[in-house]
Amino acid sequence: MRRIGLYCSLNLAPPWAGLVNSVMNLLQQFEQFYSDFKTADLAGLENLYVPAVRFRDPVREVVGTTQLRRYFSASRKTVEECRFEFRDRLNDERQCFYEWRMHYRHPRLAGGQLLTLRGMSHLQFSDGGIVAHEDIYDMGAMVYEHVPVLRTGVRLLKQRLQEE
Image 1 (cartoon, rainbow, N blue to C red):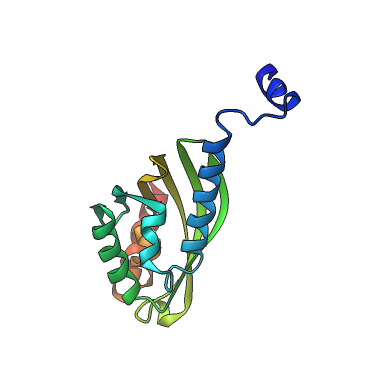
Image 2 (tube, rainbow, N blue to C red):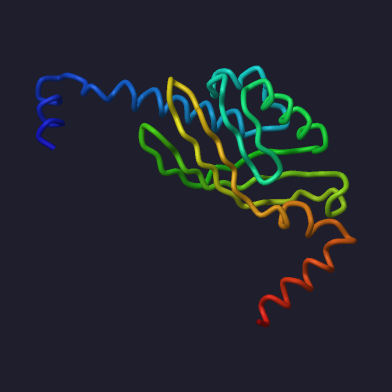
């Protein structure tokens, strides 16, 4: 605490202030990009991620912004709407954990109704960008529970597991 007081009394910015500001700016850009994922400009990925970023979710793992752009482009083609609502965040200068809700509409899931999925993201920073991004969510809640053929099986399995 003394060092912080010293910087303030001398009207100087502490040496880590620039790093904190750049992380906060990066997180603001991240939230803006994903706030309307369906229409976000994929060219903006270079403003968020380093060229060799490692992205992972329950569906796929990709390396590099070129592969990430291809994956996102293909993913967005199948949904009519997709946006993220960021609920909570815990971060420091090296990493960030987000709690979010994804609101999405797919013509072949739940009769095209708007669905909501809970999830978390873990981001790691270096070199002024995101070097690793992992999304964690329940694939069953996202897809399987909304496909009529699979829905009954998923429900029966959940009931059976709760009984044991």
